[in-house]
Image 1 (tube, one colour):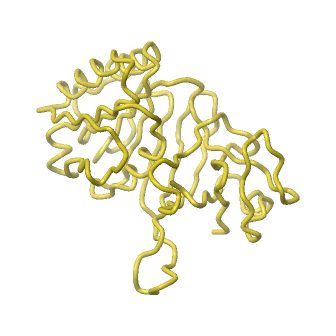
Image 2 (tube, rainbow, N blue to C red; image 1 turned 90 degrees about the horizontal axis):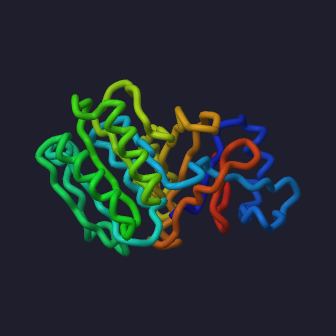
Length: 250
């Protein structure tokens, strides 16, 4: 889903070494880069399916959805939304997610949402479980997140916990914790006053076995809904782009 992945963490020198100006493709790890100095970059990811947490920096900012859905694999997705998350941030709209086999659950409160997520993780036929919770509910404590992490690891079903309208990150059993926000879009080549290609800022502020970092992700509609972020282990510098993507210059 991304035409370009700009590498922020590590400084401008590391970004320039990828040969962004030439628009060279970032190849898979098994294939040498075509351009001199064209290192291969990857986003850090857990070594096996587990619980990952995503914080939206603003309750009205749905940029996290593009980041998250780009990483979903095959299989039906169980999407659980707490009632307050629906009221404050909106209900997920299945027609807006083409190609996604979606099972939607509307839960009356956080406790019910967490229960539905854990029950869903017991079904290894699912491709992923996503849960949206509003603010900082009492039911969402360290024990609850540990239960989700263990359930995901046991069944092999990745779980994403989305925190909408939450304040500071509290104690959690999530293996990876991200902050996501929409950034100013790229310039529209047809109309300077119209929005261009969507851009997201992604910050990994906690991860087991990986250093923190920041990335700028650029959506690419031309790649279609099947394109997704590559979540393999990081290489040089701790950032990565899927084969065929180009590293943006800014």
